[in-house]
Length: 203
Image (cartoon, rainbow, N blue to C red):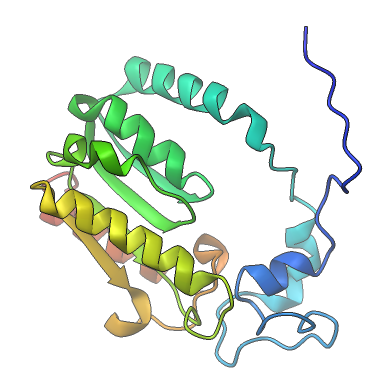
């Protein structure tokens, strides 16, 4: 039996919210005038199709999500785990729970991180963390990135091997938060593949 949930807040985000939060356009009000960052790789002509697939984010079921995720890892791994955005805490925390089953982690713009007090549990797990473009111009993302880098630093200080890569600094430019949907996503995928090859996990 499921608990009843009562809320006075809207279940779905307003149409323009992801445009402004996911660094497609330069912050508040940019969706209303369809202003995007110069050089953005997000296919802005299909933005409304993108928001049709948005679903609510419930923070009350995080514990159940992590438990189910851990069960899946127990069933199908050893493996490489790739995760994005709000799944940051899930990917990192499940890897901390089962480090012996995780060959590597690929974190694409994680919006949250694992348990810093258990950073040492990731010391044997090679990890790649990727960030896209326009972060410095955004109101939220400098803090999100700073938290991610601090977590990576904690793992490295505990003997781990975490590489943090800012895509614009290596010549892959124009990425929004939705990197897998950007027009240059294949270029990013090739970079991830090359990293996995360096870990001897792909051939």
